Image 1 (cartoon, rainbow, N blue to C red):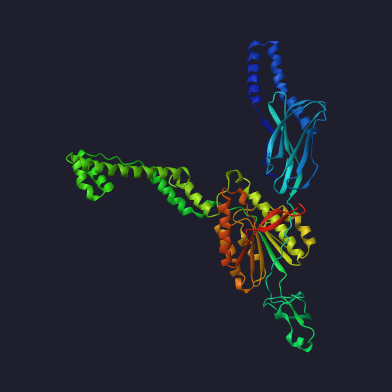
Image 2 (cartoon, rainbow, N blue to C red):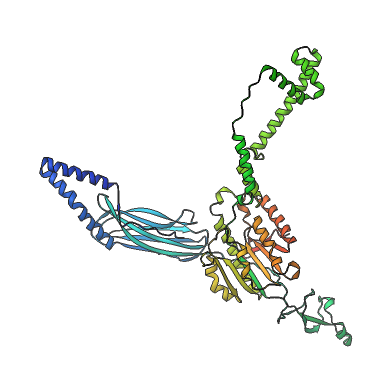
Length: 552
């Protein structure tokens, strides 16, 4: 994934230019002062060095050769990809200072970045770099060489040589299967599909045949069966089942947690600001301090012991009463100390929120999204989720096409002008032609949400919609729950299903994430939307398939 190249200067000065300038001033001064042959030779050497070096470096710029090669340009992710870069000097000249700006994958293979490699090319020599990388995520990666800087012997200046030679490595997702029978919504348009049904969605009788054990009694044609006492006749109906399925793929980035609790963050910041304000100093006279001690004593042991407190302070209390009162005060102090220890334990366990108000508000916002993601996974979480959604969508589309359904695939794609792509698929061959474009869709911005995809659905009633996503934040849940009302309501034949890729292994608490998914399933069910979680699993042959999990 290549970044936009910046404009570079044809000539670039280095630290050696400062040394060259000082030597040139020194030579001019001493040549005029001493008028010796040595100073004259130094002067003319420095004067002639620049034009000669310029021609020398220019020859290298015109003759330098670069080759970039990758053995495999189309691979499945997590497959080793070897590649090679070579810089060749075909001249008898020597170039000791050469800098090559390379475009190489990071150590983890997630993204490509620019790196500088310093070379020394002998006459008729070359320098070769061989690397091998595992790409964990799908996409198009450009590996190659951006440019070369060729310097003179004294490293005074360098000349820019644009190369821009790349090898495009297309990393594809895994082709998984999802063997599951799916339902589609009913339609008012009769079709040629005849099947035995048990619901009231029947258009007309399509066929009459003899009874087979297992047929429903409601399907028996009693009037015709009475004319043939030895045989029962069964009616088959045209089911008017729609074969049109809309698959919506959400490649948008996750919404930051602080979006869901901005007011809480403000309130917590106000509280934190108040806590940071310096305390006001008050000076107490002995009389005020005595009254304060009396009030504290009354609060601690009760109003009934006020007289005993006064006697204890004044020194006129009886020894027995004074001992009882001291025991009560000691008991109160122990209780207060126990409370302080409990608060300290809560703070150490992360249960107290007054230590850092901003992080506490962020914690509550993260809990509202099903937990907090582990810190080591936050940098590549968007790529990970986009990969999971892509693999799930590929399996879902292929499964629908195998069942004879017509699929309209709609997804967010930042490479398109309007950020949305759509295609109608009637057979597996149609999806094969579209596969490369869809499989390499990059993650989109958090504002390119499901709401932008719904207007591309042309039908207004009895629609079957399957949403492939990894988001269960409050905003997304609201969008999912509103879908049935946009297409006639949940009771009018609209079938909406959310197919969830759940990266629960990247959350700090897997149990909390599963509980959040279960509560989201209940909430969506009230709105007439099904939530189905799909996860990769190994089948009997050792392959990888998508199975339904936590769908109880």
